[in-house]
Image: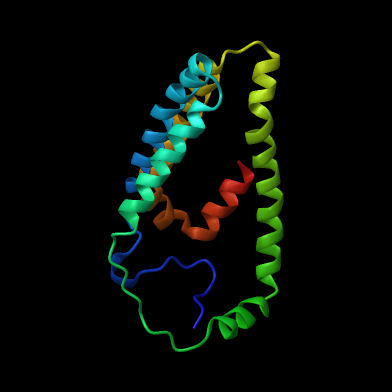
Length: 162
């Protein structure tokens, strides 16, 4: 059975601390960005990709060792997909997020070209990512409280508005 829109999953308290856990990912990202910028400036633009590939390989190897528990499903994937696609509100949701994603990707893809046009060094570009990450930290840290106060639908609307 599909959950009603606007409801947050409550089974066994799963997800209640996701934002506080995700804060550490943002801190790691913010700390690594200036290092990647510095590496690109000193050693060439290939090195951040080499480091990223090595780190992703280590992540893959550690994740491959995680135990995976699967729960039995009452229905097939395709029957669930048919039920989801029968709800017209899903199309509005996808269209809105497509527009938001396009806007976000324009910023992500052209920010560094713009900064380079202004004469910024690659280290400064990496520092720019760190500064942007600072804005995420309070939102992630207080996400549980915000979900309780405004609900998932309210947070989606606030996020799209911002």
